[in-house]
Image (cartoon, rainbow, N blue to C red; front, side):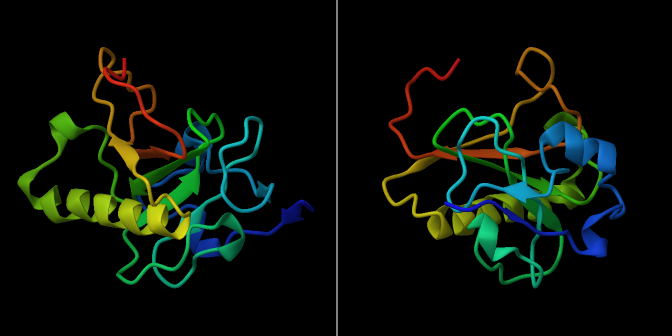
Length: 157
């Protein structure tokens, strides 16, 4: 499988609420991809703008709604397929989300569902949002983890 390099559209860099440092911390700042499907350790993350600007090389498919979030493969995958969906709006964590964020937070799950389908996760997947230090949150820009490609265990932590 050959490695490809693509650049991100300018609108994906420095979008209001999503800083380059936050993207790097979440794994989305790099531009190299090892191919479709994700999940290999050491693989650089890729950023895709939700709506119109998806990069097919990532295998995250095409979205069908307004540009409000980003999705990209995790650089430290915990499952064969592990990607993140983050809102462009700067929400640090669930506990500080407002009533007005309800539709946006639900939209993250819909985008996660669409990406999971595009990646062939037909047998199921897990969606997780970590909250606070005890909940395992390490980056304080809310993000939805979508993990699949193997049987998940319970309890998770």
